[in-house]
Length: 388
Image (cartoon, rainbow, N blue to C red; front, side, top):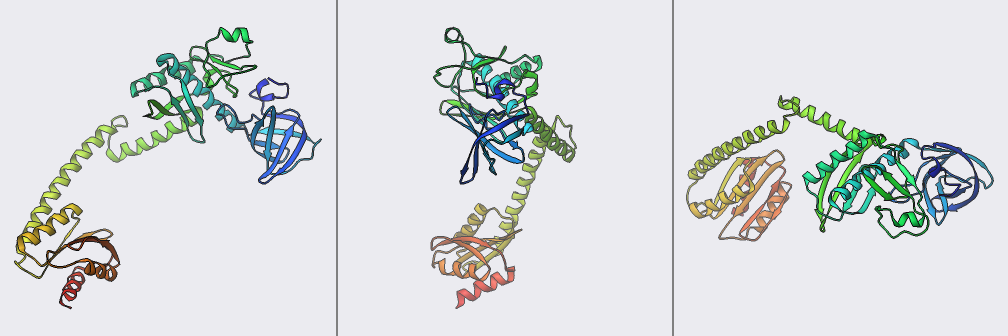
């Protein structure tokens, strides 16, 4: 820890005074170096801080070698005294996420022996990659243990052990370390080498919630949220589930059962509609005369697969020269045309042009959709086209 790294001396320092050492112009702004700073530079998976220097906005903070660089939207002359003010709401959010990640990853390592091989602290969620496969039960267990560590409100310990102490210490690290090593410990959960900023007590993490997971490349990617992000997520889920429970007239803790019943009822209704439609179409098909040059049948909301089957049956059973079946939907007509005696592609092209449609296919079967035209207009157009 260097004397000018105020964020290590006090992670809760939100304002400070310093002096500008240098200011260089960049294509997208300016790069300012201060004598000392409380702005944490991007590192260890944690984004750099934002805020202001006097009235100048600090857009991001990075470190090059041992120098912390503040990227700003305006210049400040070297030698100028500045008052720095962090965007504390953002910084504390990042501290909650980062500390929550340590607790969660430490407990995965403790219970399963897996390493955290990837960590991304995003704007909305935290993504963790582990070296082994985790299932839903594993993650529920770790989530419960992690929140128990939060409830215990254990003090976070930050130390700089010498090489002798380090050689006897069991800790997590994503890379080989040289020189001074900063160890962050959450008693009962994790001991890890880390350069980021953290809360002083685990209770400040507030809550850890697993959002999703997927097994990939022999490991597991887990998405979590912590602190205020977790609270907002739970509040959003509660609002949505409350709305669903009202729509279903169901207890808020029994919405999945209500949806299951609704799906079953919907499936039964669809089956009944399908059978009724099938019988209606069979009746309409039976009314068609045999060996017609053109046989046209129209209905409503027929499945595209059933359209093709019906059209083919008309050709096979009624021996129609051209069979055309149209199904009316909210956005227009769906159609299929089949013929054993003519190439239907020119007719399909003309039909699409006349009724603002699209579609195509091989010569003996074409299908598509039309956005205009009445039943009478479609029949007349096909009749006229085949007679010309």
